[in-house]
Length: 369
View (cartoon, rainbow, N blue to C red):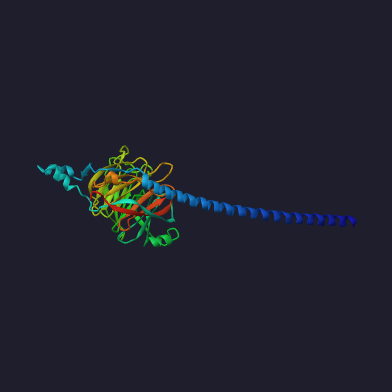
């Protein structure tokens, strides 16, 4: 009996000791958690302060770059080829060369050039690191191309609807009759223009009616061999661009061609009206866009850094090197997969590492006007 009482007392003493140790452990744990919370709060404040300092440094860098950066390269349009131009050139007989040059001296009537980036708005993050989004100026609808290929796109009624949506919920999914290849599509006056590339087949430009849901026309790609237009985005087989002057095509004639070529296309028939060698190199190019007949090529590095407009080409030869600033994009995430220009808003719709970004542009008149 005494032995049982002794065992019960021993058990009681051990239980009391364990309970006391558990209370002490809980107290120590609570103190440690409080310390971690305090350290986390201090670290978060330090990170906020560092982020504010980084933003301030970036703004100062943007200012210094706009004040002291070298000029971008502005190339002249001295290499123009007209579709069917050989027959036309033979038929002009004794006409003077000056008359022939005057016929093609003005391709567009727009007289504006980009002078800088006014503001940046990071709208949201949807989808893959690479993709494209753009706005149809005629209807204000927004179209999202997730990834670098597929047979579906997403349509929103406005930029506001897209910004308020959760992912692509609430959109109209449009199933295309064939796959689009690369983030180089364009939407212009209610039509979708996209690149179709299939194995062991020619590359084509497809014109698709977004209202009726039918293919209106296709055109063969004007290249000798398949090549990508930007070395930093090899998925971009070619880049279709739309501005106030119409539809343009940026491409490379072959994998050995060092420069980006530009073609003016008839948006109704997809006929190629004129072709230029921009002499803007494909190497280290990540994207490009067209404003008023001027091509702006954006460059970066393979380890993504600050995107910059470093080469300009004006089809009317009205931009001189003295007015071509080296424009830097604010450093955000990685590198642009696509940049699409909206002439009515004077904005760029960019896709950067899955983020959808809007750049508002500052414009000025060309000096030679």
